[in-house]
Image 1 (cartoon, rainbow, N blue to C red):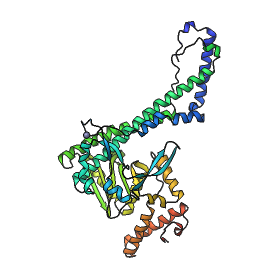
Image 2: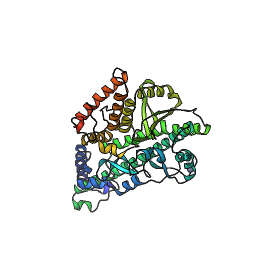
Image 3: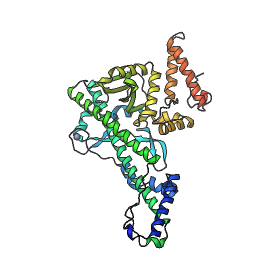
Image 4: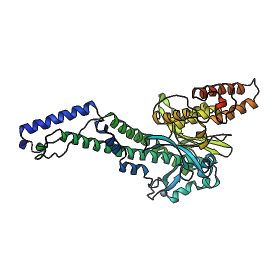
Length: 423
Ligand SMILES: [Zn+2]
C-alpha cells in the first residue's frame, strides 16, 4: 500500500490506517482464502465470464511451421475409422469437467466433434487425407503423420491450459486485491476516508492455491519446451525424409477391437530413473486395434523394453490402456455402452481417480473394460487345454476379476448386467 502525501496525513489518521492494515493482514494470515469464503464471492470468481470465454475459445492458427493461416477443425483421431468403430448412434463417451456444476462427468459427444482441435489450415490438413479417406493407417509414413498430429494436439492442449491458468492467476490476484481493499476500507471510519486517496492497495502473499496455478503453468511450459516442441520438430523432419531417423516408432496390432480411442502421452523410465514422456495412440480398426508409440531416437532401447512389458498378454495391454486413460492422458474416448455397463461404485472410482489422482502415482486398480475381459477369459478357457499356461493364466485373471467385481459391490457376477458366469 502506498500512502500518498504522507506528510499531509495527520498522525491519528496514519495510525488508524496502520492499525486497519495490521488487522486485515492478520485476518488474511489466518485464512489465506478469505476472499473466497463467501459463497457469492466464490461463485463470482469461479464463474467469471471471461474465464468461460477462454475455455470455449477454439480458434487458432495452423501449427505447421511458418504457416500463419487460420486453422480449421482437425481430428487428432481418425473419424472415418477409429472413432466410428467405437461409436454408438454416432456418439462416443468422454470424461469432461463441467465448470458450471464443478463436477467431472462422462458425456457423449458426436464423432464429428470428438478429438477435434484447431490444428491445421485446410492446405496442411491435406497431409492426413490419405489415411483419413481410406480409413486405415498402414505405412510407416502414415504412422508418423498420425503421431505428428497427435503431438500437435498435445501442443495445442498445453498451450491452451497455460492461457487458461494465466488468466486464472491474474483473476485470482485481482479478486483478492479487490476484496482486500474492500475489507480494509471497511475498517476505517467513513469520515476519515473523505480526504484520502489510495493509489494502490495490494496484498502480496503466495497462497497454496496460487502456487498450484503457477505450478500448472510451469509444468506445461516445461513439457512443451523439453518434449513436445523438440518432438514436433523431429517428427516433421522424419516425415520429410520419409523414414524414422530422429524418432523411434513402434506399432503393435492386437486382433481384438478395444473399445477406446486415445491420442496422448504416457511415461517410461529413462536413464537414472528419469521419467520420460512418449507419445501413445490407441486406434481401433475393423477387427483389431493398433497401438502406436513415438519417442526420441535416444530412447529406443527403453521403449522396446517397455513395449515388451506391456504386451506380455492382451490383459497386460488392457491394464496399460486403463492406466493411460486414468493417469496419463486427458484425450481419449470410449464406447458409450462400456461406460453404461459399469455400476455406480466403479464409475465413481474412475471419476475420482481421473479427477483427483491425475498427477499422483496411485496404483489403485480400476478396471474399465470389464465385458471385454470376460469375453477374453471365456475365449482362453474355451480354446486352451486346461494343462496349458494360457489356461492357468486365464484362471488367475478370472479370480482377480471376480474379486474386483465383489469389492465394487457387484456381489456375485450373475448380478452384473449381461454377466457371464465367471465362477
Ligand atoms: Zn497451414
